[in-house]
Length: 470
Ligand code: 5AD
Ligand code: SF4
Image 1: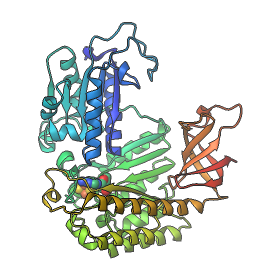
Image 2: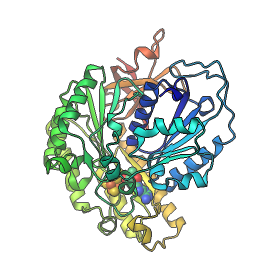
Image 3: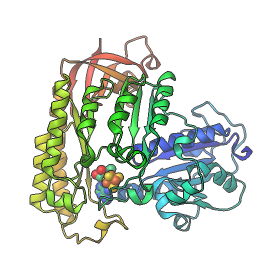
Image 4: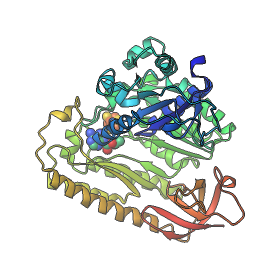
């Protein structure tokens, strides 16, 4: 497609890891057509927004960023092209594209709201982005293509996983097991914008993992809205435990995955998690609330007692292998009808589990979801006060979980240097803790990025660990 050759593009990503994956595919696809990625929108002929509509905050941020591009001048030539692409002549115009979950949800409405948007694409039409961009660039007016998952499938539009990719970090790859979600938690918009669960064939996933390992990828993150049900739509039963073991043995060094739904976390998966040495001892298990009444209203399909039994089983299985596990979760505060007692149940659960990390959210009403029709009469100040109490408790818990690492030697996968200090290396422990260590004099950060080195921990904080290279 000659229209895009030589153009500079910038991708802005909001939201979850699936969007990060999709953005890498967008970058890979545009580069394969001869365009070049740049880091700043002012240098770009094409700005692509990969958006999130899970909570209102993300929605508002996107609209603000798109609006601010309207009068942003186009710079003559990029100074910081990631691939060093330098263009001699100034660009003629800038094309703005909005994709991801807001694109899927709002479609043509977005162009009405913000007329300087040139392209809207959805979560199932990423493969058509080049044609849409080219048409907009040559002046054919606003281009909108948003299709339901079943229509995109019937029309044979390539899925994101079949597109070329440009990995942000050469040692890490996102590997989607599946797309979509069948759970319909009552607060959540995801099933409406990502469609139903569609698993990828088992052999395809294992072959991809083996190829990535051969290419030098050290760490893979398996992705899905509910990885525990991976395979059910294709094989009649979930095959996530098998996938963990097979990808874990593909030649990579570290395997992570997100996200697990508690109702589908099976004994086989817990065993595979604990027994596969390359599967990192980190489990993200969103609980959402510590009250059975709220869990029921959320349509989560488990109880607090069941959740706690799962946590016990995970701790036991990992301990039997001589390993410790870091647990993390998502929690929503202020779901419609949540009482002080319900909320105390959440605090009690957080105390009992001992999370290493918890992502906490204030409930955000999403139009079109069942919970949007529920009466919501708790005053905002009460919800905010609950939220603050929860955040404080989560921070104490994170601090305690990090404190046990003092004096230990941890293998750290380094990512580069700290944003604030070029003399400090930063990386991740097996439990996914951020670890800082001083860059040895005379060496360069590139020697460390994408390598695993031992670090002796000398200082532990709530959000990070600090140590010395051994
Ligand atoms: N309001 C607040 N938080 C939400 N999440 C999903 N939908 C909403 C909503 N409407 C949170 C859940 C989920 C995480 C990705 O986002 O905790 O696990
Ligand atoms: Fe949303 Fe629930 Fe599906 Fe997660 S499992 S994506 S919270 S509907």
